[in-house]
Length: 422
Image (cartoon, rainbow, N blue to C red):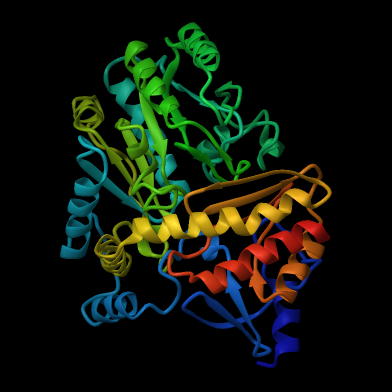
């Protein structure tokens, strides 16, 4: 198919994320990808500053991950998980239990991060129903969060500044505290505690993105807050969910963001980098208390079963990705990237309209005091050979961990140029 025909068919037939139909802007056509580069159909290449929405931590066409998929494909590509099991899934469950905070011991596989959050919420709601306390049916969180695009995750995404305000009045009504600040604030904890105490009889669980709020605004907060949430959850008899879909597998500088606080949630969600960006997969882990509570209920099963749950191909490449990560000096790579982002983005402070520049782990953010002109910002980055995907008032990057210093400099230069153009 020639390029012109492909682009026109895409515009008329394919509905892209967060876009109108038909599209008002033509997407770039990717022909292949390797390492940290996306090769476009016109033969040009872009350094990927986004890790394909934060998932491709090892880059593209990594020989170890390619081999894992090819080997599993020669055995079986898929088999239902109801009544059957297979070695890749069991091995992955054991690994996840080993590397996540103790005592997260039970793993429910699903097919995306958003569904992992759905499962986490369902676990918590069913737990309280199983204990004869159905009045505990609401979720508490703080503003500025994002947990996915399916319905219950949308209900705990920021109701004002989030992408789901359209559904106000249809989504379940949840309990929102103000967004946390970057610095630890004891008065904030006290106000959060007061709000929880007032509604504890109806709150089933607290759900937050630990340390970094992702698509809700790329905000950072003190890890110490997680310890307070753990203590408050225990004090008021509610469960605690950590959504580590964006933060898991090293992105913030620790293997999981929860590790920075030394606390364990009752339920944890992982996804995105779980398979190294190769295939869609999510997982929800819980402590024995949650699993045994559900098992003692009138309905002693978790009534959830995605068709592609624990898909063997996804499980196999997830095993390979985690093994590859743990065998590498990933921590030093993230520290190196963090240092390069800090120095490379510093010039953005001098750009008119920039309100903040912040870096944590392998995450670099330039925040504007106005909405990004996305076409102009994207054009500026592409002209410098870099792919970025700005949104709202943010131009940010989450590069693959294999990004070298030269490509990292290109990424930061492109971010500054995009901020200037936006």
